[in-house]
Length: 399
Image (tube, rainbow, N blue to C red; front, side, top):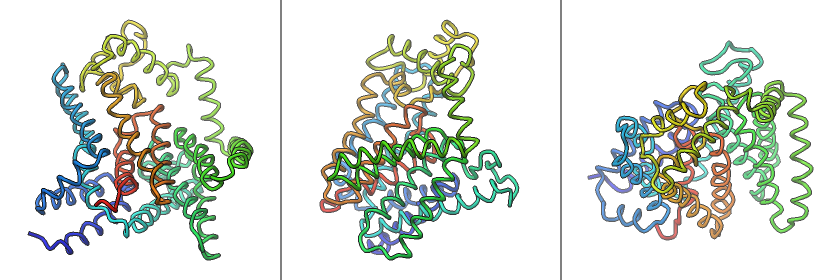
């Protein structure tokens, strides 16, 4: 139906455009995704596509995780909410495997460059808003200048972008003086941008990234890496805490919310603690298979009315592990973690520096931040995770 050469190039152009749109627009990214999916579905060569997917354990783990959500509809009372959750998870059934079959190694630098170009644009708008050169723009305010998404999504994406630039700066041989200066400049400006915006999960990611990049750069000098980490992380934290109002305020608020939890249950940190404690009561009742894909809101309301009646109901515990375990039990949690197991196994064993370093870091960062929110339910962070994993965790020699 289509010339394989023309189709291949079309895919690559679409992927480069998608990389640019990931941090900028839901509608634009979805438009490209739909175009890619339709092309893939009508372009034939189904046996080859099927073989590529079914011989890859990561893809099978992703698909199995999705189908557990469908199976979980069997014992769900709230089918409507269950279908809503299943719809949000469709990336793991279709988009992830499709992207995995069409990404090409020679275009990886174009994907990453396009993504970072969009982040640079976002960063510029963020600074223009912060300095009040332009009025509040879309979601950006002077106090919290995150223009195209909330700080919950923006800071983790920014943190991963900082890592990508650091990796390019430190792991690439024979960089020109100009390139080193340019990358260093963006690392500094993006790092400052991290602390004039309010996403605490992304800020945690940032400090983890410092440790990760140090250990990756000094991979043969573990003691030196450990010393540098113990020096650099507290120093950067101290500087950020004493120079950024929003970072200072949110750190102090988080500490106060934890210490005085009993009187701070309505705060963002207090709510997360309450959601987790109440959710564990549900897990105790349904440990193996959970309450079903759509019944978290119903079951949480029952427990909430008994334990914390003064609190509002919730449809999400703001913890990916807790949400999966409530919905699908330990079976669902093990299925979910298997995705990361196969990612990390591939990255650690890879001889390719990019797959080994960046692929490992992507998995580690998401494993950490999902304790603070359901980051693989949100559009921006889920799409970034799936898109980057599709080419970082691919064995190109077997494809």
